[in-house]
View 1 (spheres, rainbow, N blue to C red):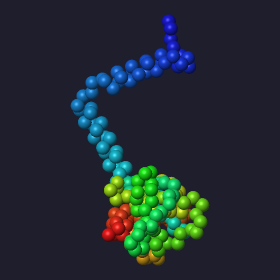
View 2 (view 1 turned 180 degrees about the vertical axis):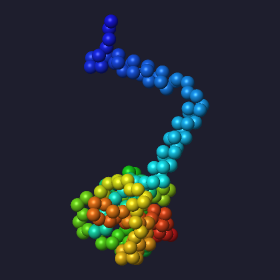
View 3 (view 1 turned 90 degrees about the vertical axis):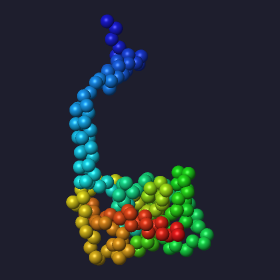
Length: 196
């Protein structure tokens, strides 16, 4: 008997595992079982989609902001922002190269009446929007992603600034502080108007 140990490095165990996996994947499955598994997988996705949001938490100045993860494409190291001649939109800072793509950069601090840190310790770009309407938004800090039950999103009070209130869906409580969940569609429309 010549059993191969997974530690001896000749791949005998890996080959038998591959053969077992092939047999598993090639086994016949009834259409009823396939339909039931498909229904269960879709139902779980719909439940998660309906009950929770994944949110990217960032900070500009003293204000914590949340971007819906479906709207936030990626977080990137800050790049040089080049001014666009003959554009006077207050919130258009210019354009920046992000992973080889030239995208407009927005001054969300001006748009939402926020005060940025003068020298943030870990500044980042949050790249938002669909592929044909990307924007780079400089932020002072990115805390990370959180999952929040929709039931935990509270209505914003009237005490927050009018600009921030107009672009906020609600507030999220995070370890004793509140983050404003931004309205993705309204924010993107407002940013795009700055290019016209």
